[in-house]
Length: 187
Image 1 (spheres, rainbow, N blue to C red):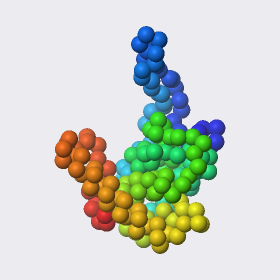
Image 2: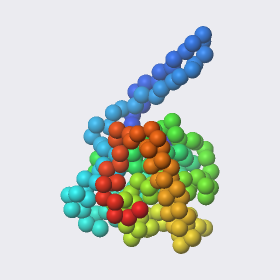
Image 3: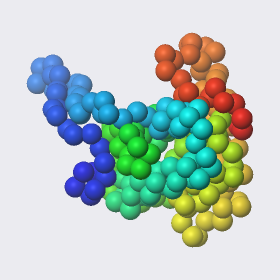
Image 4: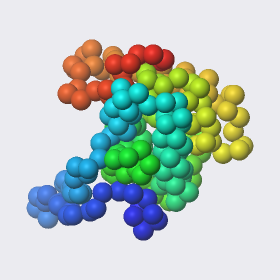
């Protein structure tokens, strides 16, 4: 992805664990992005700091540009939630959890919907649709009608959230939860 201009952490090593000559587990080890934080935490901090609607729109516009670059190089990220996108300044973004990336993939409505639901779910607790609809609109091809698309995104997000909450009820909440959930203003 780096050769296509997509920001990812610097690869440092590749490790394989073998048993009787067969690889049964492997890991990619990447640079620690100590100068960055996930976009959910970044957004939470700038909202608490009093960010204006203009600042939030600018952040979302830059994020949309970065996400569109993934599609432009036919790289589909299967877990494109805010926890897997890092930034230090809200203008330049790094994608992590690269094991979830498929290459040479043609985007279709199903893949695009999955990513849009993940992104919408990451941000809808803190941002209203007046910001999120234009953001997702920037990610849609002209062939899709945003007025039809958004109700489907909202419905799928509610289903996704209900499943997550159900899993948490059974297995306990994770150590790190999206800090934007504290806002509870929208979804």
